[in-house]
Length: 319
Ligand SMILES: NC(=O)c1ccc[n+]([C@@H]2O[C@H](COP(=O)([O-])OP(=O)(O)OC[C@H]3O[C@@H](n4cnc5c(N)ncnc54)[C@H](OP(=O)(O)O)[C@@H]3O)[C@@H](O)[C@H]2O)c1
Image (cartoon, rainbow, N blue to C red; front, side, top):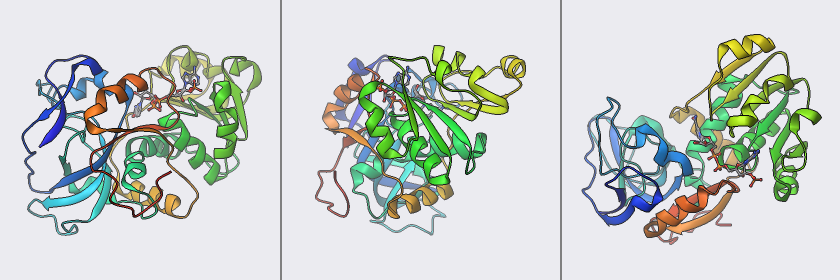
């Protein structure tokens, strides 16, 4: 099968489009014919991209951990999936990914693709959507009426976090550059701080939760904007207990987990027209390197998606 692979640990410059072996599936798994796969620009820096869960080198590797496609074949014990069924899901970080014609996945991690989306838009959901969902609801416990500050609101995770928090009835404050202010208000943000012209900590005080997707200095400056007893969830750094205690708040550093039930719930919100994936650009699979290079510039609006099968599947929105 055709795949994007890397034989050498490094950045996008190491990615090559070539033939690779078809993945094998074990009991409880499904082989998925990939129609589209989305990327997280930083994924080539993650250890899990290069090793198995025991730390053993597994090069050559295939990147991209989120997929939309159709079931090609199932392994022993999988009874709830038929060949041809449209599915989407977050893949295991320590195995080959979806930048290929076929990928193996745990059947339990795959959910029915949202009916209203085409394959490209469906591929943009699983990793960022689940990360935003778990940060907001599993870790921060955001509820209606809460004030939530979302850093990196225009990015892959941020665009979902803004929409989920808004749909839950929270008051949403986002940080982004000027060009994204109107866009984020249209997505459901009540307030947007343009980080290039103001320091958010000079404008915002007493929030119930901070969802940080930026890390670094942005994370460090966020503790003081929480109300006592508030919670900071970061997906892009550490949240040391000593610092959280100093501010009288809770800090969580999280790693997203596959979750079929949550993907079903997210698909429901999408099909009800309450949430939409934002796709910044689509690249044919052989051009994956360009997708990563563009993503690493750090100003993607929503997601970058690799298209593996041309859009003959016209079963949904394509804008
Ligand atoms: N722990 C986990 O489970 C997990 C899961 C997913 C992702 N991640 C990590 O989370 C991070 C974000 O991922 P992503 O896919 O959402 O990233 P992304 O889509 O590449 O983020 C790009 C966005 O960041 C915004 N941005 C850049 N600098 C900013 C700043 N100083 N303040 C506010 N916004 C800023 C940009 O907005 P402007 O263009 O307006 O500047 C752009 O929209 C990455 O480091 C990724 O590795 C972790």
